[in-house]
Amino acid sequence: MDRFLTGRRVLVVEDEVLILMMIEEMLADLGCESIASASMAATAVAMVEADAFDVAMLDMNLNGKSSLPVARALAVRGVPFVFSTGNSVDDVWDGFADRPVLRKPFRFEELAGSLTRALAG
Image 1 (spheres, rainbow, N blue to C red):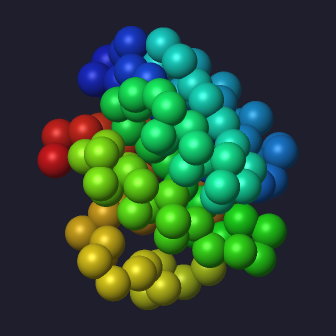
Image 2: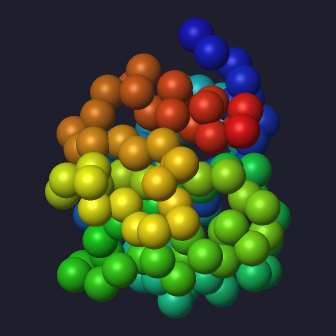
């Protein structure tokens, strides 16, 4: 198993509780030290401004609202992140086309690979 994520602090922005629980379990299995979560963009932006994260996972659509403000806040602070979406991967916003995109549903290996690529730059 890839241990590149061991000890990492991860922010997960996801509005579906069951998906969030699955992601949190996967991240714990990958050895992540701290997993913080938010279901709304404003909450996530406040967390990004207040805390330091090694990497983030960002659902593009939060209850019908864009998570673009979170992507911008992460980018300003130099925090690598991956998008997750149940929609088309062609919907990635301008300026963020270089970010990895996880298409839901995804497997453990896909999550690990995407976060590792994001951290590797």
